[in-house]
Length: 303
Image (cartoon, rainbow, N blue to C red):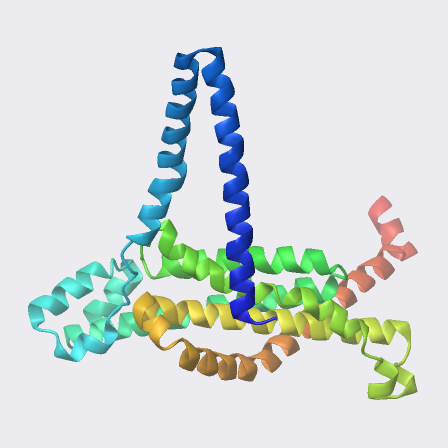
């Protein structure tokens, strides 16, 4: 089904719902008028106040919300000293960033060092979240749990990235970022179905054809896929905050290609760290269980 057809179907469905709802409202209003005109007018007044407060006002606010501006780092070289000073003040630097800024030879160099430091911290946050997503979804064998977990972690990651930039976007502006997360995490629901069709024995020989080996391989691939999507979401969020919503929309295809390549390069390291973490936790847990069975340890504890 084409995109145009889906849009037409959605519009038609929306129209049917509106017509049905309007008919029900008119019917209720007529019955209220039959009871007493005051009751009828009270009903319509409350209805219009409800529409204005919860439908019309949010819609107008959404349509006229200003676009989120980027950090304008590409203009730093062209800024006059006074404008650069205002720019540095608007960065709302913390104590560590203030020290970094003060140690720089020039204000321009200080601003660039602060922005670079924030980029490094944001990148570190994205990688840590991707690693956590890999571990949780690799261990989990429930597709619905994977979706909820990945979406929750991605939303927290976005909020943290925004806070690290000391930005104060409106809820409407944040909605654009959340849409990126939702559209990306929806792909996760297809992962388990695809992996269920993979025959580990055919890929790696009969030795890997056991149900345990197949489960381990499928879980690892599933965790890597979810971590890859998290990397993409985090990197796209960073670019969105850097470029602003307008320039981001204008260069969305180019950004997607760049982010896709960057995330693909980083996923092997994330998967390696994730598998090592899981393996270490399993070994530690197993050793603790064996040690707890040691009679010498028990006798020592009794003494």
